Image (cartoon, rainbow, N blue to C red):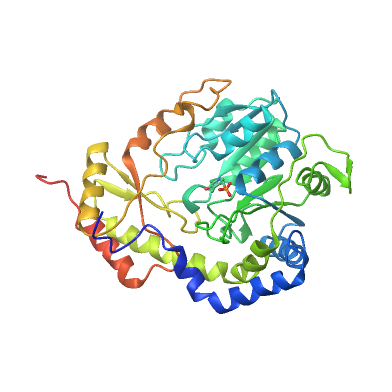
Length: 375
Ligand SMILES: *Cc1c(COP(=O)(O)O)cnc(C)c1O
């Protein structure tokens, strides 16, 4: 596209705005002589736990590692089954596959595109290893009901909060509803660094110590391997130093993202062929602004219409996990009519905290003026 006026993302805006402070922090780390799990890392773990209202937070190397370590910490291993949704980008599937656990996919709610509690109830067994619920696009899943179901079947619940860092439901932050919350600090996330990073929140002391051992070779103390399945998954000191001030700005950034999603909601309210998926849950933070169309043809036309107006779009995600050519097949086949019905009808429009009013209006106007030619 040659005439990009509104990009899907522009990460340099965030770091340009924060540049003098960020440079000072990087300098501070450089001169400290301590580059992994130093003072900023310890402080970030404390500040992140406090912000979330969790007893513990553990820094790890990525969101995918957070999922893998959380699965291992709640007891998943080879031959466990992990329940999850197939439309959430594949991260939980990858994590399960790495430990040799099998995936079972649960269908989604047609409005929010997050896990349907009714479908979960149909699919869950008491010997399942874990349920992973993803707060997709910044929409908060129905975690109170999902947690009730998990408790009834005594299956641990893991929240994937990589797209909803800082979101809360009735005053309680996501990442504190289940046994563990998993976060990613990949640059595009709501709280993003300048590289990879992640965290796990938990209020269980046992899970906290298990994850702390797992992220560092399974060591209980230096050079003593006390836990099976250990790996190297540490959060580096530069990321930790830069994420600390980012955490202070997270609620403000999320408010900007929510405002953008609300603008798009107003722009599409009258339409009978497109609607916003993002913002459709009881509470939300904007992460991706995802639009659902009446059919695939309308989706393709809408994307062309926006491209003509200089608005970049993308699809999150074009291939559901159970149709990925090289992910293991699900260990129990469950019908996924809603997942399969929406995959060809969704696309994403720009949504990031530094998007300007003018850009937001450009996208909103393009959405509100869209209609299928000839109708
Ligand atoms: C980004 C993301 C992850 C993985 O995080 P990485 O840090 O990229 O490994 C996991 N789950 C969801 C829903 C994500 O969006």
